[in-house]
Each structure stands twice: as C-alpha cells, then as structure tokens.
Amino acid sequence: EGQKMGDWHNPVPGTKVYVGNLDRSTDKRDLEDFFRDSGKIVATWIARNPPGFGFVTFEDPYDAKDAIKDLDGRELRGKRVSVQLSSGPRSGRGGGGGGGGGGGGGGGGGGSRYRDRSRSRERERSRRRRDDSRERRDRGRDDRDRDRDRDRDRDRDRDRDRDRRRRRDDRDRRDDRDDRDERRRDKDDRRDDRKERD
Image 1 (cartoon, helix red, strand yellow):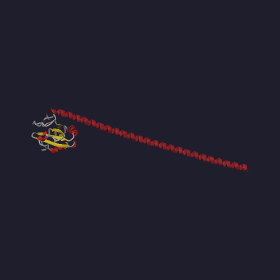
Image 2: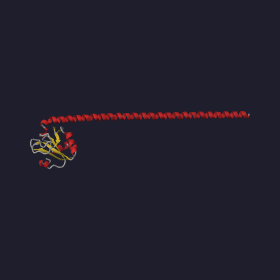
Image 3: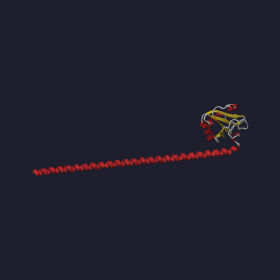
Image 4: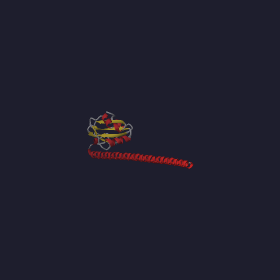
C-alpha cells in the first residue's frame, strides 16, 4: 500500500516523518487522516512486512516539526504512536523501519521519553490556558475601565451642560431685571417731567 519501500531511497522533495508503534490494521487513509490538520502531505507509506511503522512526507518542514510536536504520543486506532523526524530509511527488520531514534516501533526504552514529551506538552497547554485566561481577564478589566471612563465623560458632559444652562438662565434673569429697572426709571423720569411742566 502507498509507495514501495524502494521509493524511500529516492524520496519526493519534502520532510519525512517516522510513525512507529502502528496497529497492524492501520492503513494509508488512517495515516493521512491522522496528519490531515498538520499541513500538506506529499507522500505516505506503511510497512507490511514487518508491520508496525510508516512514513509521512510533508511539503513544508515546519509542518513536519509541528506534527511531531502535536501528535507524538497520541493514539491512532487504539495505540499510542511515536512520531519523530525520520533519520532516513533503514533495511533492518523488526519494526524499526528508519525511525528517528525511536526504533522498534516506539517501544523499549523510549517510553519514558514519550512520557516526558507528553508532560511537557501538557505543561505547555496549561500555560497557554493560563495565558488565555489572564488575557481574557485583562481584556474584561480594560472593557470595564473603558465603560467607567465613558460614564465619567458622560457625567462630566451633563454637568457642563447643566452649568451652561444655569449660567444662561442667570444671565436671562439679570437681563429681565435690568429691563424692568430701565422701564421703571423711564417711567419715573416721564412722571417727573410732567410734574415740572405742571
């Protein structure tokens, strides 16, 4: 299934990733689905004699590195698989198949290494969750601060409007009072004039 083993001696351009500890029922489509979200895949190959490992070639080396980081130690068809950068094809049997230092389909002494990677990934996820939570909290605090600032600005505008209206009303009242005083003086002056003429 997939490419013949000899094809790996003349590989297509790209970065090859070793996948070990595969269940013997795993096929090419399972492997492609497993790596689908990691990036563009240009070739896949699964060993059949002996079974238990395979290779996936990515067009972009950064996608290959991300796949190793994200998928190493994840389960595929009920088995926790080893995902490593390939060190090149090997002709040896026994399920090693050119794995990047994992050998034997990911068994043996590599288990503690996988557990360390798994713990490291879990710590990284926890740190990202804390960072996300802190960012949401800060964002919420910023929103509340902006709301308070808007409320203060509105209150300040209302106070200024009230002050302007009060000053305008006071000015109008003064003008009315001055007008009344002026009319009263005019009236008194006319009365005095009539008295003088009489």
